[in-house]
Length: 366
Image (cartoon, rainbow, N blue to C red; front, side, top):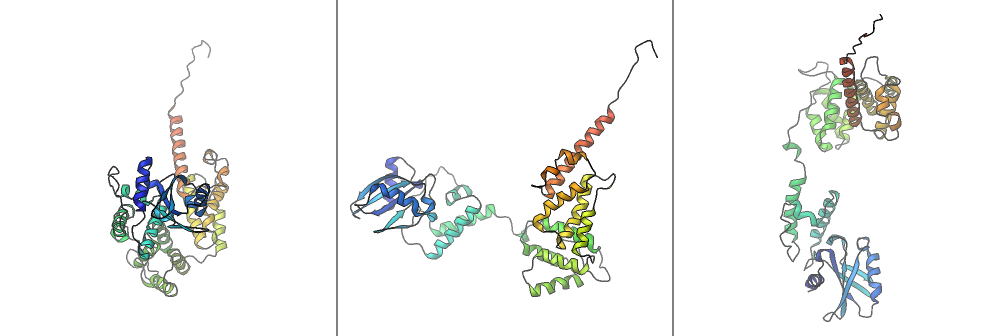
């Protein structure tokens, strides 16, 4: 009855019922001017609601109040009742269920609403996400929880990436760390560099990265990770790489690694992009050794580039690298800008070499 009243009232006032709520149980003697302020302070979601009218409901012996919100109402954000001094009011929306909903279904709908919220969507966007025709008239009753489960499953298929097992990937190179290298095994340093880059590129959960790392290990290297997992089954892949570095990498302390990073300078004839790539390897090693915090990586990199690049280098000036140290770019953005600037400068040099200047003496003098 209350849901029909909400829909009929909105139709008579020519407003969208999906943007409205109906508040019932308001006592006859209650001050009309106090209704809207009470609703606005009851919850932040109703802070912008506007009272559009009230009507006496004979069957209930109380008033029903129609309020409008700026946009479509999210039923899960609206309380079912609002406590007042003399009792409580009931709130009805177009998404209200005609009968009590099981607690498990309410919890599921809240989780679904939270998931859609992280993606910048609401329950009202579900028809569009499922490819339904927005011109089809809306049904009078709200979908059942079973229908929402089916709809969410279809929506997840559209927005979620495929499972890691279903997507092809390049396997990591083998490494054993044993005294006799296995066929195809390379030295630890280049293996670590390649593996770190690959793991950073893969957009999969950390547990999947750890699984792929383990499958490329053999012998003593595999034993290191097995021992690590015994004490911490959920060990992160970053900690696995650090353990392998301690076991098979160079015996350098954090201070030694950081000192090498600070002493790295652009060499004569070396491109800036090549210098940055060489410096990045030293920076990653300093991070793995704990000499540089991950949160300070971009700032530390740019500060050293400014120190290490040859004085008055055109790229340093054109990209305003000194001025950007308070808001440093990421490595990918920086190397992209540097390589583009190098290409522009190279094109300018070619143009200068191809210009020929002819001077002719048209006078009678030598």
